[in-house]
Image 1 (tube, each protein chain N blue to C red):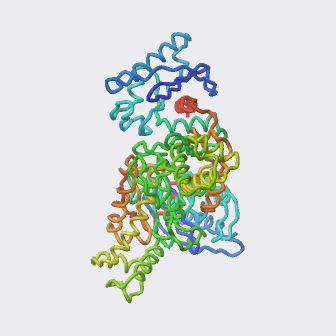
Image 2 (image 1 turned 90 degrees about the horizontal axis):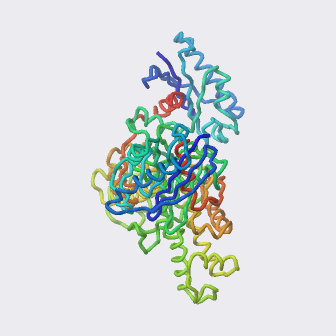
Image 3 (image 1 turned 60 degrees about the vertical axis):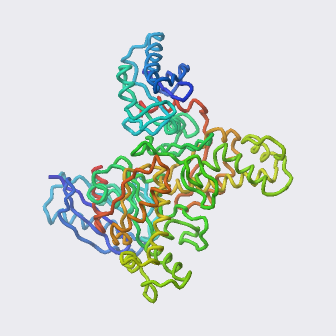
Length: 310
Length: 310
């Protein structure tokens, strides 16, 4: 049996998994992300944890295929990260550094892209080889996988779909400074923004009135049949469906895999997305499947492991 | 020396080229596209022309790497075409059919995608490995090349960027039935449409007034400094720049290569595109080069040849 380490480096914790080559996770654990001194301890801590696990399990290093790691920041296909302010990191080659610390082969990818690879391998996108994953969380992230490989992008910015332009008439600014980004409508905060905007428009009765609005509250109201909530869901679906239609015209994936906190509302969100997608997308690109992500917070370690054996 | 045939199948003529493996074209010729009886003679005619050239040149078939062909229609990476109404063709595998007719290895791609590959290999995109080619002709076509390979798409619809949604406020329909497609602004007919719309808006003096408006006339007026023509160019650049910004967020290419009839106006069109691109694109995806296509009508045969040796 051969082994792979999958590492998902986040701003607070580093999630780690020991996998076999069939994609089965044998063990999962976490270590804290120590960001002091521009994050200089992060990779040494990861290397030590890997070495500790190898010793603990008495693994033969010849049986270890390598280490995959997903990190927050733009990372190209050679493993160069173009700065990660969250970690205090500048520009350097993550794969080379971690490889020299561990003596193992290392592959690195952007965290959102790596999560997409994980979902394709063992999650909602299993069975496909070309998918676009759309992560609807605090922001909107994405990962483009073509023929089983991440489209990392020339400067590591492939799959930055949260900032594709989707609404000409937006008056408020996105965090990136532009107006009309997909993230302003389809993220968890975007859904809340749409809800507040709709509620302020008139006095139409709604179970949402008087409540502390969050994404879950909105989708629960949609499921109850609340008309105002349904209007909000339609606006969410109109813009996300249109945005995914644009992406479909560029890379024509087999499937979109929808994940992140917003997707916890379940398949109901797909109803609002797919109708709008079909209505607004060029016919040649319209036959695209939609599915929900299934790996949750583990997508990163799965995808990181898959990086090494792709 | 090894040889490759590059074939560019169009609705009226089939352009053909004999290449060596260094990408040098040794001979170019054309045969008519006979579309009678659902285009049943097209591939046999191509096969006969190839066999004739092999005999004429006394080539040893062991020295022929294969035949590449670009065809108008959605074509996946296995060579299956999903119908080509222009040719009378239904769904079948072009590579397998032409291979059985010639006894040679055959690779097939969509014509716009194949032209993009040609420009990357020997044209305006030479030296890059990840480009998006944008062909501004009667319509707007595109081709996405990642790490030297065409992104053909699940249903052969990769790079269908003429129909990405770019303007929320459009009132007229695109040929595809939707409103606000990139093609409605950035194609040769799109530029004429923008020009007529601008001229009808008011009576501001312009050298364009009273002229038969075509794309060349508009860009000539821009070069003369005509204020109304410059406004038209700015609207063209605003929408195309924004559209390419969206594409950059999806695949983050090294460069955009701009070709087609509209690009004959020269580098002046890049000025209008790149300023708008930089102003509206997410910062992580903004550092993208722009260049003009250089192979003109030969891009198809070059790209077809490259298909076989990629």
